[in-house]
Length: 159
Image (cartoon, rainbow, N blue to C red; front, side, top):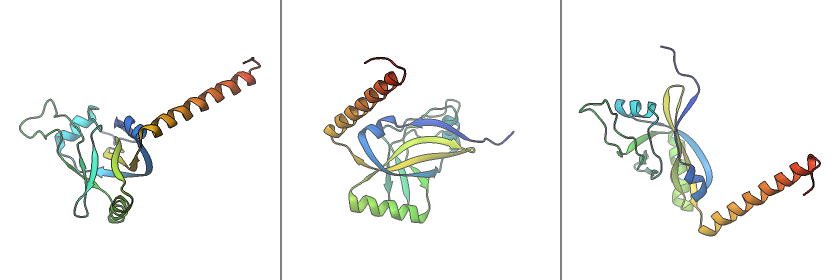
């Protein structure tokens, strides 16, 4: 069987970019059991309630839901167990320092396979206030209206 190439997206946390200001992103490997990998290969996972905790110079992924493998036996995994993240010592120390200093949180953005290995993209993020979200929506709408008006003008149409 040929080795997998490229990137296959399994799950994405779309709401995270709406609820948080993303400051920095990292790619981390995951320590998984066999049935978790099979479940992920079926494209089943949810990152909605996930977060990363640093405990004893190790990074742990909490709250990510990987459902039980349907054809698994007594060796099946629990759906919401904590999973160890594989990061360099320097990256873990840097993340821990920034979380403690600035009050940031670490959230998962996406879960994917890269060249056959399960990876998770995590981000250092700061929570948005409600008015920040409304401001971002207003900016996006204004930018889109400007692009439409410029496009119409370039085609020779009147406003």
